[in-house]
Length: 380
Image 1 (cartoon, rainbow, N blue to C red):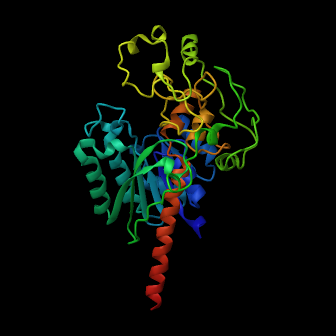
Image 2: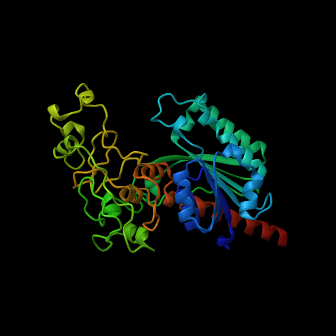
């Protein structure tokens, strides 16, 4: 049964990938992250798992095996996303020289020590060009040397799997059992189900004023989309829904920005000094206001209106942590701990659970097919 499949999550953050695997049918047994606030959220929302805090360099495979109650080779799937800042397209100094780009060696060290049947590693698209392809080659060769002869990587678009956000992630999948690599089939987009829009995602959440924090509150309306039914399952209240407090000058700027608009709609005299010299073709997302019928831009670790399209479609404010979490497809019962700044970081760093779920289901499909084929061969 799928519920017997086990997983351990390295660099787990708040646990977006773990939540997706859980929805797919995995039993997540343990997780690790250096970020204390993210770890508190993971422990709070994954109470069936053991959280191991601290730098991964200080944790041995035996620590994970003991926490999970397993022996080497018994784990079904090891997943993880080594910190990606060094590979990010937003980091113009990215490259293999950055020490953060070497953390995948720690992942490989634990692959060797845990010897899982399946491995999954995810990262930003910048990893494809890092070191002129050296990062991808090192990951692939490293896994193959450890016995994972079948390793593939692919760029997945989160919006094609029901996430109401334009987000690209590079995913590596491999196994040592001889099973085929099965990639999740896109479910949304042209010729498929329509994309989940921003209105589908956050249209039922309560109104907020700039800087307002109403604590735990009720929903503003009954669910009006399948996505809202999905994320509201198991929840009867709205958590983490507080608007950041922006300056009066930013509020004045927002009043001039229509849905789908940006900094170009702000009167020249109200623009930040640094943007008064910008060309009209520059900074396309800055001071962007969302459109109800569109997709969100990539949710980053700061939903800062100066850096992206994070202005609410109708209200003159930046989106809340809960709205960012909805755009990442987190369920509403999933409560983020720590300061608001830390909560935004946790949401922005996460793998969207819906994408994680599709990856998990693809692995289960491939593994089930492989086991069934092996049974037929043995019976002949």
